[in-house]
Amino acid sequence: MSLLDIRDVTLKFGGVTAVNALSLSVEEGQVFALVGPNGAGKSTVFNLISRFYTPFGGSIRFDGTDLLALPSHRVPSLGIARTFQNIELFHQATVLQNLLVGRHRHRRAGMVENILFTPRVREEERAHRAAVEEVIDFLDLQPYRDQRIAGLPYGVRKVVELGRALASKPRLLLLDEPASGLSVEETQNMRWWIDDIRRQMGITVLMVEHDMGLVAKVCDRVLALDGGRMIAIGTPAEVQSHPDVIAAYLGTGAISKTADAKGARR
Amino acid sequence: MRFHFKTSYDTDIDLFPDWGKRGLYLALLALAAGLPFLINDFYLGEATNVLIWAVAGLGLMLLTGQTGQVSLGHSAFMALGCYTCVLLMEAGAPFVVAFVLAGLITGVVGAAIAVPALRLHGVYLAIATLALAILADDLIVLLAPWTGGVNGKYAPAVTILGLQFNRWSNPAAWYWLALVVVVLVTWAYRNILRTPLGRSFAAVRDSEISAQAMGVDVARTKTMAFGLSCAITGLGGALMGLFSEVFNNETFGFLISIQLVMMIVVGGLGFIHGAFLGAIVISFLPQLLSIVTDTLGRGVAIPGLESAVFGGLLILFILFEPMGLYGRWLKIRVWLELFPFARKDMFRRQKSYLKTERLR
Image (cartoon, rainbow over all chains, first blue to last red):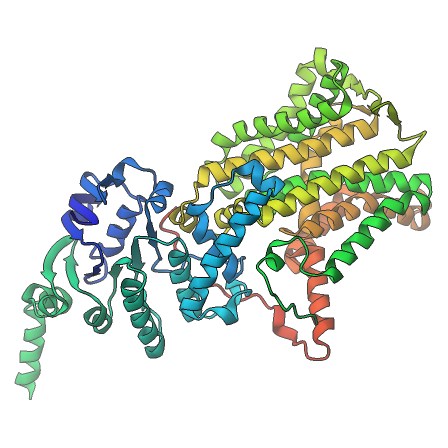
């Protein structure tokens, strides 16, 4: 059975159908990409999985659990972590504190124990810290450990957000445009990290990405969306050469007409 | 500048990073404990007042500074804490029991009120809580059989294990009582900050949407923050009522809420030190004003001067030093540490990147 199974999901905002009867399934250990032009509904799919939105119909199951029966703050406890398209970090906190929030689902002690800071809380804190340090080592965040997010450059924030998601030790990682706004070197790093996340950590990745170069290098399976509908699915090469995908990205007719017009003028 | 060579995670987990810091705060505590031997009874009373305001301020700081929720209704919770404590004492409960129970009851009531109130954001929450403060005033009058209404109530004598606490006959004991409460509350506050609880508060403050995506139950966290905040403020209210010995509905009028907000903004939002600095300003500003009017105005009292100065101060701080007195001190400290290499624009606020407002 697949790890994430979305069946026949539809979501409308007023008259706009953001996601239209979409079905997809992500197998354990895959790196799966959602591609499509702006407004195709890619981020909406993520927000559906995170339970920020409730679909009109269909089902979303994670490892057999019905996600639609859970409120959004229970989703991470199943082992689903995510990043956001426009970085959503805790600005007034340090990198370390941000990553520690990623450990939230692993906390055990209750409110009163926290207030009294019992030995058990200290024990837990040490464990959280050790887990976070692993992530810091993995992503080379040591120089920024005690810096506040508000003063960090964009590229680093992007990595911190990835780190916060990894700190929760997820089974499924949702990456919303991990390479957007990154330089060529940073995109390279991101590519290797995604590879390592899958190989070393055994985490399944579902990502939205516009950079087809990155998608082609790290993904096993790609699903192309347009207007909330699936238009193609397959390996990166298959999807890239699919006529509907080319049409969705470049348009039909119009482009050849301008080409013709240019030719005519020449 | 001091660099910490960290050899264990406990360095970050402990309350103080090194013995220098620990020593500094121990010295401060020793100074605070020895204060009754250093100053006269009048100023000792003022110092007790500062500590009591600090307790109430720490309560609001937890909600506004740490969790980012505004409340203009905290005078209501001070009143609740005070009346609960006094009524329990009149019913025969020993002071310590009544005091702790007053905090707990205020916390529970606060959390119950938070459930509907925290669906509101920002200015709407401020308005709703302001209504609460005004409502509390009326409720105290309406419940005159228990609360004494506008005639007020005399606080019963505070005794712990046969030891009498009276602000006139032994002001030092009262001062120490307030000091013990302040230290315990500050310790609990620090514990909250260094645990997942405090981090979830900060997460809710900075980005509700990603807090949720990390598994933080936003509604529950806000309710806990509101409850804890009200409990602490309730303790402050109980101390304030007992210390003033006689109190009525006007003791906890909504202007007290405004003063609390002013206190934490002027002191420095989000800092424990801020609550204390704010408390000092709140307690000594009226004295300072009366000294100034005595010397300049030859003793002619100007009605409303205090409120005007408080209001003006609040506006000036929001405009020119949003991080408050403690934020200013941090900047001075960095300037001194880096001297002569501090740059003028080091603390210029950076324009932050686009934040998603679509998801709320």
